[in-house]
Image 1 (cartoon, rainbow, N blue to C red):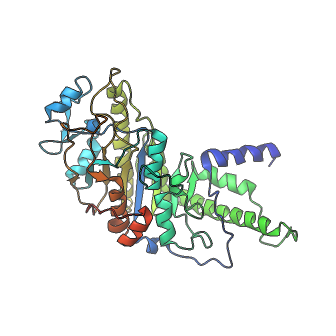
Image 2 (image 1 turned 90 degrees about the vertical axis):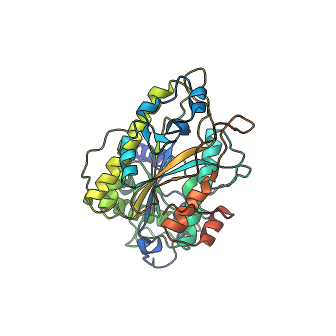
Image 3 (image 1 turned 30 degrees about the vertical axis):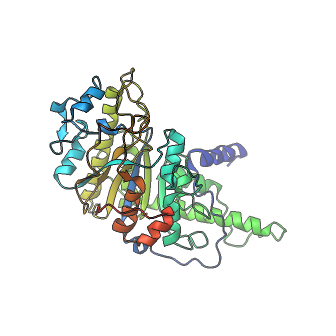
Length: 412
């Protein structure tokens, strides 16, 4: 590999790939192989972040509430096209596949999710969600990472055979950044990741080039990171080659990423967390058209993923959950869109869940001081449910993760 090619691929790693860049302790002695499936009870959650702030009122529609149509005379969804969940709420008409899951008791809807003193900045609110913190504190670690560090307590000195979390795309590493380093890998494509690591990997297992210098410890540290990255690239590539997809995925987001994840799971790569992103939800204008496309892509992507896993008998222990940094304002703006708001609904899809609507109907008669929706469920209650009800770990672990106690919701 030429110097130019190495620099180019190194920049790719720190830009879009960023594979395992922050393991801060060298590996000590012989690695002990732990089974992540045992540690996390063979459960997996796939988090889909709807980046930009999804409009909750046009996702789960209060179609029987006249205030909804008074607030949104131009962009309110026609009640005749709503996919009715009950007499008050219905799904966006482009969420037909999610509606099918509802009818099969495989969809939970958590309404009015937010947090106190909601921040309306994309970047700040995204960081709050990823760090699992209050709006008035800045936390530089992610809730997923802090949780993993409690379950796999020696993860940085004795990393497991498989990555504890796997994020596709989006170079923001906060969610996987723990108190002592990264707890997972970030990669766009398994093949590219494998090629990058292999073409820059220096195998020193035979003891060649063993430097006896003042910088020996630092060199060993770098070599150990290289070895671990190589090992993860190998298991990821192996799973990608051995796995398969049984359905045709659309060439859209997040379908492309979910297709990769399904293939990796099919190929034997277990991870308790997979994270993907779907952008485009900052619908300040022309919302009806833009949101229709987003809803369609989201619904069909989740359906393809769940169906793919079902066809291979791999669906029982996997759930899909949506997140977004905030919702939109209850009233439309002058550009036929909506501006940054507060609370919004989120979805949970899979087998063995409590298929219901949790959190009550949105209150369209009483708003906060900024004329935004009130929330009834703190977002950390959902994450606490994942930790305690899905993965089966203690409330104490959840409390430590979030530096506070949040009541689980009975989602499982």
